[in-house]
Length: 307
Ligand code: CP
Image (cartoon, rainbow, N blue to C red; front, side):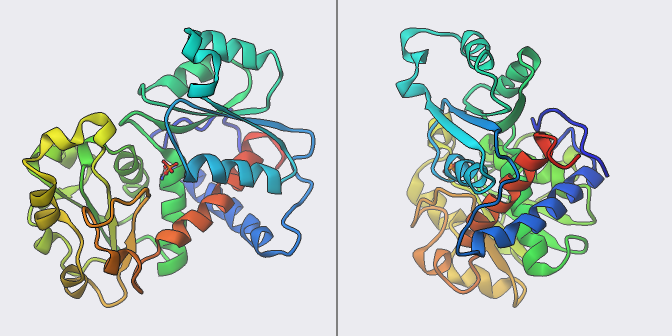
């Protein structure tokens, strides 16, 4: 297929074919990161800007590494060191950056819809690097890539997502992506952290975590989004950890070859124990590794380098 979309703003706007095409494209880039010289000239002459209004370790670094491995020029802008602190609006920032002719801008913002607004104002491609509680499409794509890599398929799996679902852009994007496949998606967490319309998205809700993880192929843990007021939705961290923290006893209830995922950053001892996060079922660092390949694929497609 030919990639025709200018932007990657969310999973909701993608077809199953487009999702699979991104995963296939990413696959072709993965081995570049295993070479001694981790660089190909594919995006030489292209300019990629990361514009982050919220903190990030994985997303921003892996976009920069992805761009550099494809020989693009990269510029990183953080809100705290930009003219945002002097009162510049997102619109003015976008228009000024556009004047410097970047090919792709990757934006992370606390305001849902900020990437969509940006995309409507500029000709450069825009990638959503996470917008509030709304979507985190590149995280979901790297998650699907990792599940497919480890399980050999997506169809027929039981995938359990546990934690602060209501504030999680990772959960939303994963649900939008996974419902294209024949997947049993189960969400678990405190009732206060479940969006009211969750079942309408094709998801089963199971508040008892012990039941939720029964025969799971994949367990995806989420952290409490403190920056979005997540801690005010639960009586205490201690109680949350007792009821919804992933422990070795949960692994025993899941399938023998279950994989444990987490988008990061981890709050060790809260939503997951050290033993499980660092244990043999954890693929958390594989997710990070695959994030580079998936983001290489996305930059390649959006810059029109495939045509
Ligand atoms: N998963 C994720 O988005 O991590 P960062 O916040 O470190 O980018």
